[in-house]
Figure 1 (cartoon, rainbow, N blue to C red):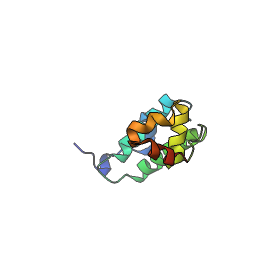
Figure 2 (figure 1 turned 30 degrees about the vertical axis):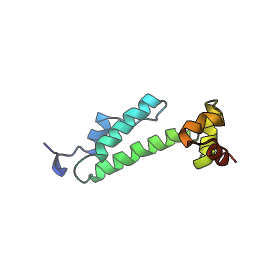
Figure 3 (figure 1 turned 180 degrees about the vertical axis):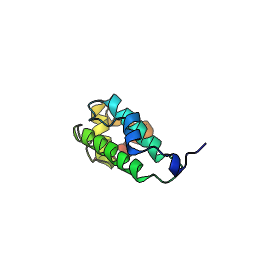
Figure 4 (figure 1 turned 60 degrees about the horizontal axis):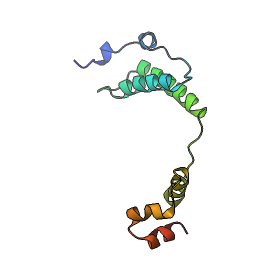
Length: 109
């Protein structure tokens, strides 16, 4: 049975089901994200109470993510170089992927 708008929980009901609290670890983050996903996946338009509740959860997730180490904004060859270095690989280890040592050398120039 799909709940209709009239069957949707109130803001207070949503808070009672899953009280929004500051997030301090990955377990709490996952629980908040699961709750967010459940709201987003509803097969109807969210009520204003649900939208407000979703905003609060989203803010808590965003605030927690700001405390984490930022992911560097790199891609392409720079990303490949970082991955090779982190894994202790040598350029010749990539020859099976690129099919020729000359191509690997060109990529790393």
